[in-house]
Length: 66
Image 1 (cartoon, helix red, strand yellow):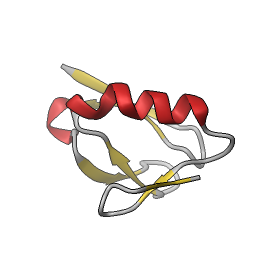
Image 2 (cartoon, helix red, strand yellow):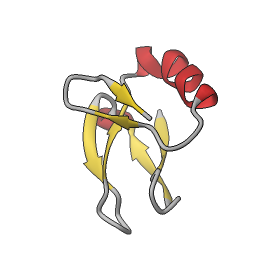
Image 3 (cartoon, rainbow, N blue to C red):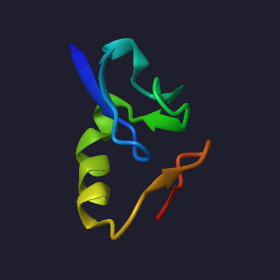
Image 4 (cartoon, rainbow, N blue to C red):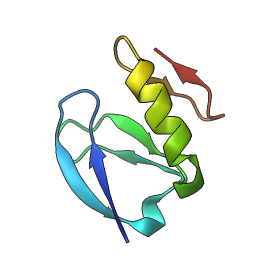
């Protein structure tokens, strides 16, 4: 299984292996740090993103801001 990641800062998209789930990674283009949700968190993450009015940031404890 693959995950498509998109940087919230520059919009760059790339494919990730499923092992990247529930990890923090850096964008390959602008080096912004972003969190890839755990596969069980994807429905909740999609709901949060759809309701966001601007960028969303997730800290190390999993709390969302934005």
